[in-house]
Every structure is written in C-alpha cells, then in structure tokens.
Length: 441
Image 1 (cartoon, rainbow, N blue to C red):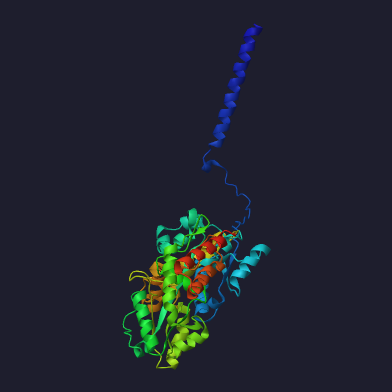
Image 2: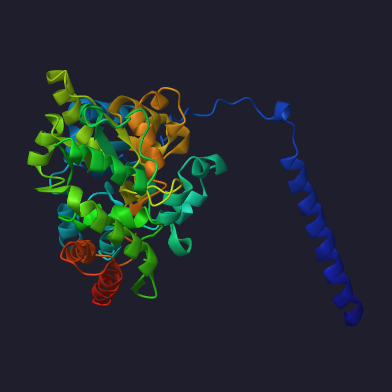
C-alpha cells in the first residue's frame, strides 16, 4: 500500500504542474483587445546620436616653389576639392624650405609629415629613416584602372620586391637647347634636330669655323656626363652591390667626350655666364632641364635676334637619345593617419589633377593619361621632356644605395679623357671607383 502511494504521488504532482503551466500560457496569449485599456505612464527618451568621426588632418610637405604663384594657387584648389570630396579629412599644405633635410631630421625627432613629395634619387635615403609606409595594401585595394594610368617604368621603380613606396608624380629630363640664330649664321640647317653624335659633331665643327662657340664644358658635373652614358645604351642600376653600368656604354660616352673637347669652351655648361652667351648668340648648344626654358623665353622676348628651340639629346645612333633624367614621387609616412594620407596622395597623382598640373604649370607628369590630354599636348617642351624620360640615364639607382657622390666617378672619367687618358681605361677606372662607393654602404 505504501509502495502504491509512493508511485501515485509523483503522478499527481506532475498533473498539477502541467495544469498550472497551461494556465500561464493562456495568460500570455491573451489578445491585445482583451487587455484592459490602461494608459501607461509616458517615459521621455532621447535617442543618443552616434559620435561624429574624429576629424583627421594630413600634414603634407612639398617643395617651396610649389607654394607660390600658379603652383600655389593650384595646390590651394586641390586641397579644397579633396576636403570637399573627403569629409572628415583636412590637409595642411606646407611648402617646405630644405624639404629633404627637414624630413630626414624630423625622422629622428618624431616631427615629420604624413605625406610628402621628394625626388626619386632620395628614395633609398628616405627608406633608411624607417618612417616611409609601404602602401601596397592601399594601392592594391584601388580600382584596376587607377594603377594603369601611371608611367609603367616609374611605377616599377617605386614597387621593388612587392613593395609600393608611393606614387609617381612629376619628372624632368635634360634636353638640348639650340640657338637657331647661331646655327643659321654657321650655315647649319636648323630645321631638324641632329640625328646622332656624328651629325652633331659635324654641326659643332661648322659653328666653330664661323668663329662662334659650339658648347660649354660638360665635364664640370657628372650629372651631364651620365646623360651620355644613357645615349650609348647604358642604364643606371645596382646589382649585387655593384653598378650595372656596362664598360662598353661608358667607354662610348667617354670617346664622344674626347671628340667634343675641341669644340667646348672653358665655361661650364651650367654656369650663368654660359647661359648669357647662349642668349646673346655666342653659343650654339646648351644642355639643361625644362626649368631653364622660362628664363630663355624671357631672353627671347627681350632680344628679337635671339631664337632657340629644343631637341632630344642626340645618341650614338639614330634610335638612341641621351640626357640625365629623374622625377618626384608622393610618399606616405607610418602612423595613424597613413590611410588618410594615401587618399590624399592618390588624389594628387590621379589624372584629373595631374592633367591640370601639366597644362597649367607646363610640368611633365608621370601619369600617361594626363600626358595624352589634348591641352597638355599643346606644350611641346612638356611632350619632349616626357619622351626624354624614357631614354637617357636615371640620375640615381632608385630605392637602393646610390649616394649622390656616385656621380663623381663619371665626372672624373671625363676629365681624365680630356687629360689624354684612353676612354676604355678611364671607363674601367670609373666603374671600379663607383663600385667602391657602393661597397661603402
């Protein structure tokens, strides 16, 4: 009996539990209309607004001459357009005297910009500061057409071994300025540019025979000599810690220098005295970058008898051209604002901005879409400079150790040849001296 009751009691308890559960469920399912209409007290609530994103200011340092005149006005426009298109990002545009030195010094003190422009030949020096951001992740996330607009050779220089150290911006190259008045006086047909070294030397001979000076002294600076190594097919670079310049191309360049010696004055090609002789119809040929043109144009406007034009620097053959060339790139530094800084860099390097930079300022840009623009194509010196950057000789081996004093062996070799040394011997000595400089890293 007790045993029977023991089993019955749990059953009863379970039944009671189910009944209570059912009652609870019904209460929860009462339709809204059956709930007494009692007015609940009004509780005032405020919706919390999401905090606004913190404004970011990108500190941008650039060359001092880009902060004045038409360049300054254009950059002011660029900043305003960028800030409008990118709410929450401001740009502090700082044209900086001693730009490169300021950034290098700032790397040690912690005071440096978020973005900057600098010459390609400073690339290795800047990488060694440790502050330059590898923007590969930002660059690779951009639309495919973004990367296609840049000059492929210069973009390749910026992206060794899978890195992307920045974006290409502007470029320069030496060109051959010709005094057409002098050439005509000497009986030289100035309708076409000299096709190669042989024809150019022939023209120099005629100029000298007319009692005028063919060209200034090009041996005074390795920067000039290097351009003729490129005119013989030489390329600047470093391989396994040694120069990639071939002995053959350097020997050809030095042999040309030996042939030019009788036609050269004692005044350095880049000296102001030589420029004055060029603009007063005493010198026939002058090698310099596009920045020389405004001064020459002023001289032409002041002196109707002075007439000039410009050509690619002739090479050893009709298909080779010389001239030292270089360029500037936009870099980003490491830190919390690197993504915003890259957005600014990408905006600047884009064809919409570089087209205006090229057309308004007459500067060659490393954006092929911009350089193909009809308005840009109206500036023939700009177009010629862009073409020249694809030839000649780079002013440094980029993003690898190549100090500026590496130009010295080229200068010394040219001077040695003028002193009577065999071009092949001088070339070999120069390569050994250059390798010694590169080994001193």
